[in-house]
Image 1 (tube, helix red, strand yellow):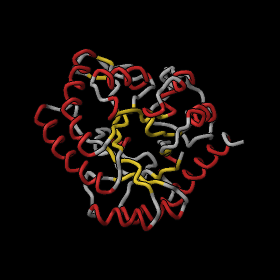
Image 2 (tube, one colour):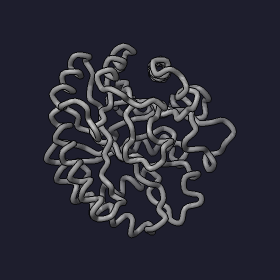
Image 3 (spheres, one colour):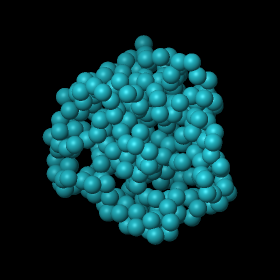
Image 4 (tube, rainbow, N blue to C red):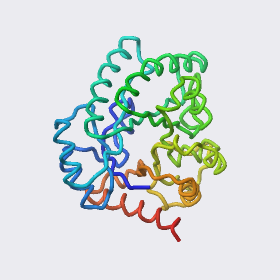
Length: 293
């Protein structure tokens, strides 16, 4: 497992609270690489939505600071109109080419846990249809999608229809879309634990389908049904999320991929960016330490 700095903006999110998991957004990729190196991260995420540098320049920066290009955000609009989907697909094709040149082979995509327009069956069929179209681009550029399901029930209590919000839901989508070799999981400990999943569910996942990990801690005083989605802490701060158990299973399975934090903590967002990055890295180091003893 290796640590990843993520201060890229989620351009696909409609909710401003989702724009950056540390509450700080990247201004300049070179400076982000410099900070990642300074604070001891092994990898960094890349913003390919509006890149300010060429692929050659970004590749040079990564080499200069000895960083792994961990992932970029997939902005294909699976829930959009046919025109929106088609236009976003064209854009992704360009991004995939850049990612391949840089050496980044992972795209991150969260799945909406609800819909106000489509029932589960129609929503599921729409995703299958559009993922089948996307599959050729993934194959051509050696890209995999890491799907993130949103576990806490709070996000869908008042919605008209629910959608994928569990490990099994993601597994079914990947299988039904025939993209097993091109997709897997972005596993957020918060979504895993507060979807009702157990350590056994992690143990039964194929190692090759675990592509990206996010750590954080839940708030005290809530059960899983009412656990807030956008209010969390850095890992090991409250003891609500089972960081030790979660990482121990991943280690036993032989997971060697990227690990980042995603706290959604207003206190972290109000810190100077270097202090926020320092605390993020320390929380990752502390998390790794508890499974190495």
